[in-house]
Length: 169
Image (tube, rainbow, N blue to C red; front, side, top):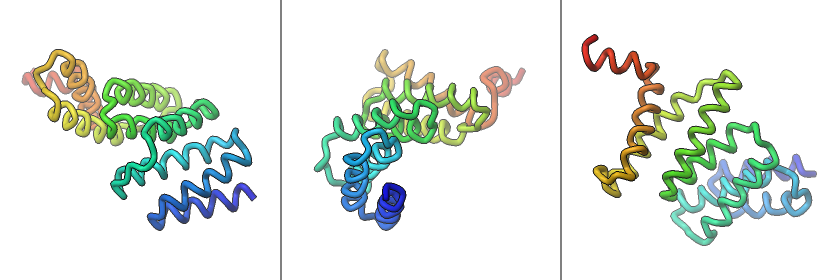
């Protein structure tokens, strides 16, 4: 039953019916609180409701709790960490977003997976978020340094290679 419900929820999400998807994921979570995919799916559907439908009927704290529960249940799942990191970035929780994207990067290295495209996109979004605050603020500097590191990696360079290219060495 759980598998069929998960398929229904995925179809609802694909169709843009995030409320229906959340309801179905809720049914699965109630039936099996240890179903990491259901917790992640619910959080992802609620996040999409917030960002795509522009509805804020679900508190960000509940969405965060859904992502965290999924990550607690399946600590090795890169998709969960990436989803949560994106949520943190979109919600302006920049230090937490950096922490989670850095965690994603380390996990991907251990699993020998390439997430450089994802980090490159995160770098651009992080710089945009910092720009909305104040780029010259002392608290912004480590965030910008991290974004630059991700962008360089996303372009396929090591920091040393990028520095050599920029300085003409």
